[in-house]
Every structure is written in C-alpha cells, then in structure tokens.
Image (cartoon, rainbow, N blue to C red; front, side):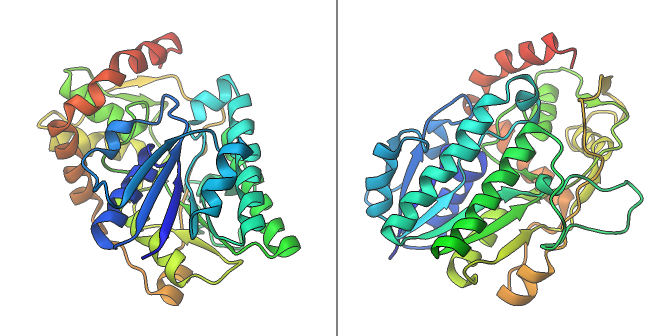
Length: 332
C-alpha cells in the first residue's frame, strides 16, 4: 500500500482519480484542496474512512504543504485554476495556484525526496488548424494562448527544470479535454446537459466548429495511475482517447440522447482567443506503458455522463443558477 497525496482532489478530474484509486487499489489517499468554487466536498462522499482523509488548505502555503508531502509516498498534483473564461477576466488566481502552488509542492517533494506526478493539459501546445492532419505529441513546441494555458505551461517547465537541476522524481502528463461525473456546470458538456434537464436551450460558442479531443475522466484516471506505477522519471506522457469532435457535434449528440431535436440550441458570441482544435497522439503512453482507454466510444461515454447528471441533481443544482447568471452577464 502506498500513501498518495492528491492535490485538488475535490475538483472534477481529481475527485474522479480518488474514486478510481479507491476502487482499483488498496492505496491510502489524502486530498489537499482549497475548496474554491470548483472544489466540492460532496464529490468525495462515501469513501472508506480507513483509507481516506481530507485536508482543507492552499497548495501555495508551505506550512500546509511541507508536512503533508513528508507523510506521503507520492504527490499527484491535480490542483489548478482551469477555466479559460475565468482566466480572461481575472488572471491573477491562475498565477497564484498554477505557478506559485506548483513551485511550493515541488520544493517540498524535492526536500523530502518524494515521487511527484504533475497533471497538465494539451492546451499548453496552443491549437491546430481544423484541417491539419497532425496531432500533438510529447515533442510539440509549447504555444499557449490564454492566461490559463500559459500558467500551466509555466508549471510544466518548472517541474522539468526541477527534474534536471535537482533530481526531482517527477513525471508529467498532458491530457485532452475531460468529461464525466463531478464536472462543474460551468464547463461545456455539463452545462449543456443541465440546461436540457432544466428546459433551457444549450448554448454554442460561435459556429461550433472548434474541435476538442474528448476523454472520459475514468480513462484519464487509469492513465495517471499507469504513469505513476510504470512511467520513467523525467518523461512526459500525452493522454488521449482519439475522441475528436467539434462542439456542434457534441451539442447535437447530447440533444439526441436526451430526446430533443438536434438543432434545439442557440449560438452565442465566441470566446476571445478560442483555440480551434486540439488533438492528442497518445502512442507513447499506449506503446511503452501498455495503457488503453475503456471509453473509446464517445457516444457511450456521453450516454454514461448524461445518466450521471440525471441521477445526481443534488450535486450540481446548488451551482447552476449562479453559473448561468455569470454567463448571462457575459452575453454567453
């Protein structure tokens, strides 16, 4: 049994990882989370008390971080400010969490010689043209386009520098867009699903041509666990499930699965600097570490996600009104 410290474990992909670890290993997990608006302790309900603990705290606070890192075998760093729209309106929290928070954690991991895995995003690579046959690889140059993606790029580079300069025992993964249970309703897929549940027409940025490479959160979790167990120190692994869909296709698929006409949505003003296309080549992860996704069929993954939001209204309902009010102010 290993002791895992999971930062941001009350957030979307962090909480999914915690549930996955609990179901598939005998590891002990401590979650460190600041519980900003995106962190929800309800996402960690019903976990076994003999294998789980929760600590409320800031990853940028050395007094909180140091002893927790010392007491665990592996640090799995999910905590991040991650919503692009929010980064355009107030970039400062993204610097505090994504840069200073990551620095604080890797300093503690270096001091105590702990294994460290850093969760990042494919958005650090910028975007691809819609008709470009290429996909992102581990060798793609960084080209971030928003305060969010630029601070994630900065945190990646910090981890790489600490590996080379100080011998930090770290790996990095850059993942494509996640979907699944426990995702905040400000995000694209749960916003559309919960709008349809509430009898509100879904909202589509611009023409809806922007392409994302979707992966179910369970598949992201299994990939991260594989990297922690088998990954080579200092290496970066891209995580993707070959799930490229444009936003228009995703909205129409959601409407179809929920018994609505495929054109029952509204167009809203596009987001500034909206990246055109992300696409992941995860061959290194699959070939070298033997990983493969469970939800290779995006249609089945969406159906699973819709079912979760239908049966867990008590989880997302408290967030919904405030989220829609904020989008209305922005004309979106």
